[in-house]
Length: 104
Image 1 (cartoon, rainbow, N blue to C red):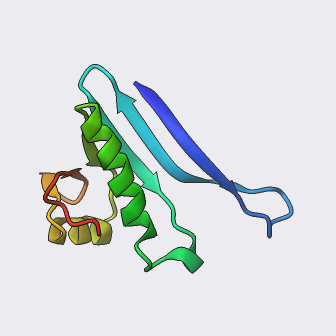
Image 2 (cartoon, one colour):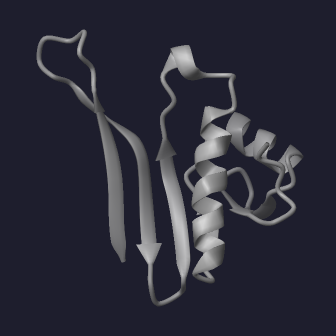
């Protein structure tokens, strides 16, 4: 497994606090990609930015015959993704993004 993380630095905090923007775990054996963290800054919320990130990763995953999963989800986000057509894998924890998942 390979883990890919993108970070952000909070410029308003004097100790250069670092947080995870997005964390992907890529399993080349099973051809699965898991997104376990996605952080959208408050000022960017509710404009579809997170869904666009997931959609772009899904497109790349499909090109290479990988499956995309959202894991370690909070119940509210899990519910939203189920309503958008994501496939339930583990109740309130894991969904699979499929071609029928509405991300636009």
